[in-house]
Image (cartoon, rainbow, N blue to C red):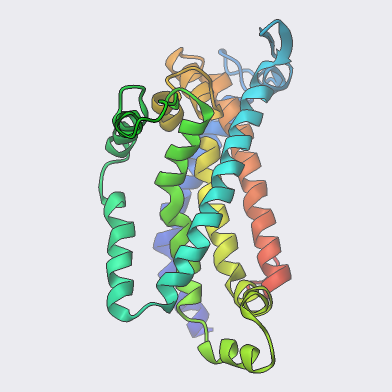
Length: 285
């Protein structure tokens, strides 16, 4: 009983902090989402998100559902690319010597020390039509390419900004992996691919799921990357929320934020369930 009382006392400051800066703001978002300009209860804001229509290229579409689908599509593409790039990098780091690990860790962390906006502007300089990339292609006698203002540019920006969030969780798991398990698998006749499939990947799955969560969630809700690298030619859900807020449509902006929050919470719940089911870590509520 004393230990429980001590644990609760230690958790009390965090509980107060979470209630004040997490629960209360989310409560305000929900309150605005379900009220109109006169603060009367309504479902109109939520309904508008699912029913609003507009004409795009001569075709009538559901405006905000299309924006949300585009956001989800780019976020999924970015997450998959981060996994494909980050998993081998995390494995190389985990198997490298101590000095090499420190150097690689510094190289991954240094870009994160710079301001997010500066990193995005740097990619604008690289990808624009008269930028560094096309200058390099021109010097090689190759045809220039148009990247800035496309979905590809937005994906590049997302992968660059969120790749460390994929690498670090996977690396932290792989660095603790018992190399004797790998040696035993090879002694039992497994080739390199079999060791990866039967031993390394299952053991690193908690880090993979954590990395996917940490990349997918901010990728869905991002807006500055799409504004700058997408040149404002298409909206993501974060852009739509910011636009409604700037137009002083606070209740509809809150409704979109509320729907996005529900989707993100569902994603986190799915990731937690997968972690429990396939790794045995954690406990079901």
